[in-house]
Length: 213
Image 1: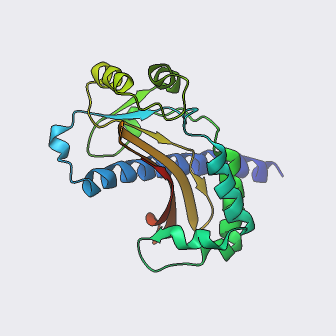
Image 2: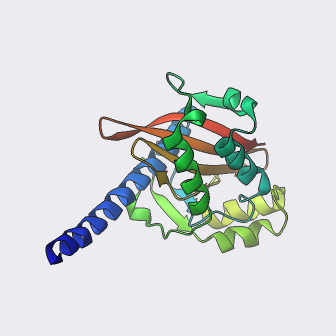
Image 3: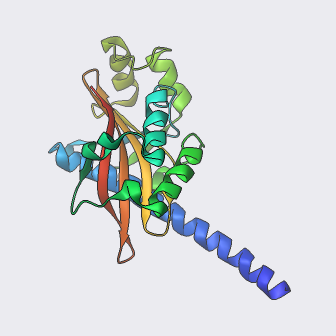
């Protein structure tokens, strides 16, 4: 009995550490892919701003309603708006994926302390507290005023905006994360990113756009 308990206690930290490494790899992958898709020369970017938790602008009823619709398969048209990077998979009728969506929903608003040094992207990361972002952009949801953005850019010396990441939810074969990138008053998006584990690596499988401007 004692041997089993010791083995269990040893496995927990190893699993937790492995998942921590995985979600930093996922975050870094998404940042690098964004630079690539926007054809931005990373040599000209001094740093990337990552908020330490989802802001109040990001968590909204639309997001949770879409997750509920995916779990319950209430809206059949949702599948048509999932963009697959490779061969489509009927994930909304996959039991493992549905269980994962439920787990993701419970983890969505939980705060995880982030370490800038743990990111592996091509550009150095700076962590900014969400309270500071909320103060700069005020109380209004999606406050995209030029004044707020000028204040942000002046304070953080960047023209690349900032990123927000939810916690990553994992199952044996899939992973889900919600990522937000706001670059300027006219350029922002919030997306669910879906990953599939292949040969020990988490590869981007698909995404679903929640909002954009």
